[in-house]
Image (cartoon, rainbow, N blue to C red; front, side):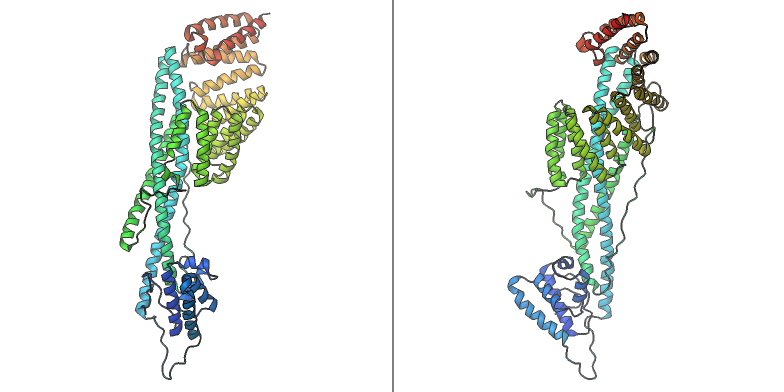
Length: 601
């Protein structure tokens, strides 16, 4: 017969049987051996028999059970060929436990297995097991937080790389234009921004690789820990007997959210925001790396001390069906889709992302951060492929899911709402886009602040779509306020300030104030020439607007003179029509000439 406090099979500890009835003790030890032989935990048994885990612990601790309990435990733990025999043995033990013989006169029954040494040893083992369980739960929570951080970081970094690639493309075009125009002062500033953006892109890719690796490691360690937690939980259940379970009310583990960090404003606020975001990404990766490394060391030491062996799939395993995608290298497919899209084939990128969305949803689930990121990229390249309505519909669904999963105030929810409004306008519904931007401005102002870059950008798009929806006066007023705020925040010489002033002048003319538009263009031309150079395409475009609205204001002779000088300068600087920007193509020049001729009549 096994000693009190030991199992009859695999060496897993049991609390000593607490009963003065020797037949009840024999029944409890008989049933414990059946549980040990089956290899089942008490939690699993509770799912197979009509008794709770607490009731199972109490009855296996020495309390005389019912017939239904005995039958249920035997049926759940004994193979079918032996089941009838084991039932008979258990029923005989139960009968003896219910009908114990009277003790001989002058003797008293002594509870078996309740010696002081056994109880002290069991209590010490309970304390040690509970400590190990608490530590494992804390480790699991730390790994869950690390994996969640990495998943969110992956989404942010993928989007950041998108933004940086677009920024590099735009700055490269601007640099080339300045090189042709010979504007060396402005060229140096643009080159610095371009070099910075290229460096940031490389840094973002490095942090993305780190985040993906940390997510994979955290998920693998969490799976190992789950096995350990289940074992420790069962050990504790075996030791508890009829005492309350010490792990029924373990304290919850929470993590305080970090407050948002405002980004600085300077002559290159977009680059500063990206640097700040990269610094935070690097800090998150560093913190998660420390967490993963610490728990890896602790698990290795603990497994070595306890002899617990946890087998991982070997590298050569062919069992890859429905594993986390991090183990199936999906990033090669993402990188390929991005490469194809940026190489000039957005339709192919769209189709690749459509396949990725289906795979991510099937394997990771529809609410997984990586699935959401892939859906965002799919919508982006759908719009880039020329299907604005299709992109709008994809963003419509994604906005709802982002709000449900991440919250209405989450950065990714706000970003997706911005893209939804943008594609809605591109699909031809300027009024709907205007209304979407109106709601987004209110939320971005509340969450990010009125002076944040994203808030200002949304206000610019709102003003643009307001004008497109037919409200030139409303658009003019919106641009008036935005030009003042961008001048205050970014400075008079910032590119965004100059762009807003151009749009303000344009909508002022459309609102019926041709003289006001003319005067605004006059001031803008001077600043464009000073900042960008007299031969910059932006300066030429402002001169075009100035000539047009001068004619509309009634000074037709002066408008013709301005147009003649502009035509000569444009030909000298830009050459043939095919080399000219859209604002100065032959169609635009013909339109300007026709309007000037009309005003001269």
